[in-house]
Length: 129
Image (cartoon, rainbow, N blue to C red; front, side, top):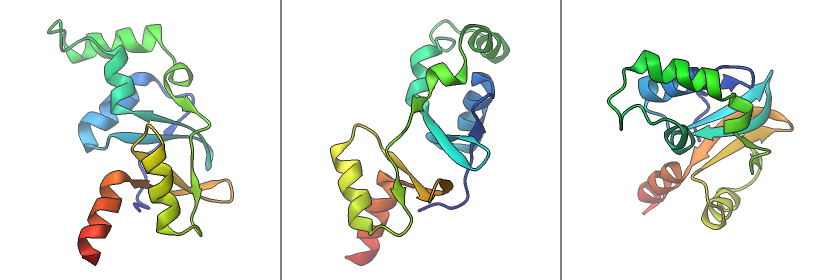
């Protein structure tokens, strides 16, 4: 689990998400309202609505177009599946295996405290065996 979280606020522009993903290399970003998780947005979500690379459009034009045509609330997945930090690793693995997503927000009550990805689980297994 990563407890060093990169998050966006539910009112942020889509261009901020695109920039964070590009600059940090993360592929899943929790969307928060204060400390409370309200959604998830992924690199795949951003790619689905961003056609700049296909048309060789400059970054500023792509960002301006995204911000003008779409709100983060429209792009993000609302009410994402999550787990409590007290749950065992197996619970995270089961959720990731049965879902069509690759990241799982980790909560302490309603407060976002971390994120676990399928890559995190693979690394854990490699350390164990």
